[in-house]
Image 1 (cartoon, one colour):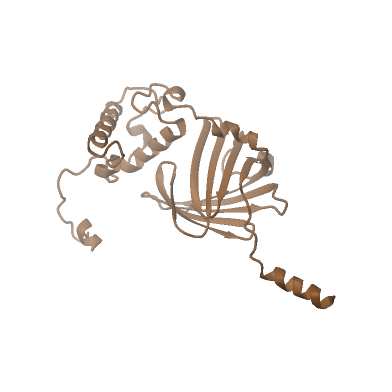
Image 2 (cartoon, rainbow, N blue to C red):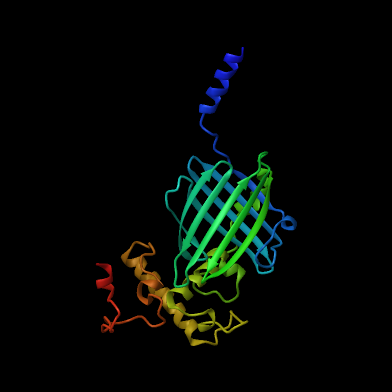
Length: 269
């Protein structure tokens, strides 16, 4: 009997560990969480895990309204590419027991790294997210405790988001963009031109048309859309960064070499 039991225990130890299933609808318990800034009024998350792929759709509601995001990771450590507030982000995600760890780097002039650790409780009813964002040497850490919800609780996130034209005042070009994508696009503009929002907008009155730069930006958006439509079958191959490269005024000719500064072609070799 002892021999048989020993064989069974040894065989069980050889079985592969079961992959934790994060799939489900999760709602943040705001009272149990510690946020880096003001706490949101609600935070909802849908996780869909299929094999090595994990898709996370999030919706955060605060005094500014609702912000949504969607990312997908390969949990075997293969690099995944997503966006973070309109900027390219590359990540590597790995599973270790009931923990999913994600290390991400965000593109742009300001070095930004994000580490996230999702830990699933033994009963599978609670999910804790510990995250740290480091931007320009400044660290922001927070812990969010999520509780599993019935599937229908995720219906609000499955519904179409308000468009930019519906949500914001005086949107004339990007009307059909989802409101969250509109804000992320604004972030992309500032990073591409190396400017701040106030370059085109009147501070505190973003719907105002008082600045000529705002009209210029609209004209540039139409120009870029026209180029992509007629040359790349509507695919966004040409964008603001294509010409501006982080400068307010794009160069019209190759620059003269400066002492001690390598040219782009030399740096590429």
